Length: 238
Image (tube, rainbow, N blue to C red):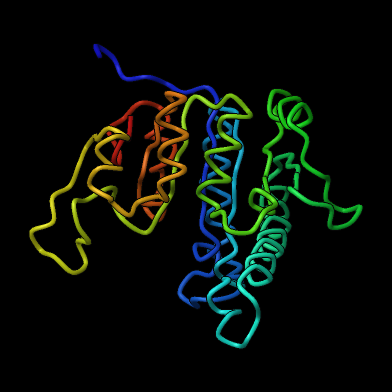
C-alpha cells in the first residue's frame, strides 16, 4: 500500500466502562464529555460516524446472575443499559453542536427510534452521528457482535474498537512483560490464536465482509481521528 487510506464512514465501538471514567461504574460527566469531543473531531473532519455503545458501566449479565437473575434476563438488562448510555452520549454530542440520533434494536419509548437499516443509512449519509443501542436486540450476543453487524449494515469502510489498551497483543500485556504487539494481523490469525480482542463471531463477520478493524487506545487524545486519517495507530485487523 503506497499511501494509507482515509476512511469515509466509520463504525465506532465504545465500551460502557469508558463512560464511567475512574469511578468504574455509572456515568462520569467529564469523561463522557471528553469522549464526545473525540467523536466530534472525527465528524468535523468529514467522516460519517456510527457508534455502538456498551452497557457494562451500568449492568452486565454476569452481575445480574450473581443475584439470581436468569442469564437471558441478565442479558436483556444489559441491553437496556446501553440505551441509558446512548442517551447520555447523545446529550454530550448535542452540547458540542452535533446532530445525533439514537436507533435501538428494540422499542423503549417515543424518545428513542427503533432501528431500521434504511433509516440508519439515511441519517448517517445526512451528517447525523448515529448511536446504535440495544445490542442486536437478542440475548447471548455481545456488543462486539452488534458493532460488526451494524458496520456491515451501514456499509462502513472500517470499524474502530476503542479500548483501554494500545492494540492487539499475543497475550495480556498487563500480566506478561514479553507480550508481543501486532501492528496488523489477519482476522484468520486472530481466530486461530484465539486472541481475546473481540468475540469470534464479530471477527469472522468483519473478516468475511472485508471490513478492517482498528483496535486502539480510546484514552489517547486524537487517536481515533489519526487512525481514520490513515496514520498508524493501534492494530489493524484485516
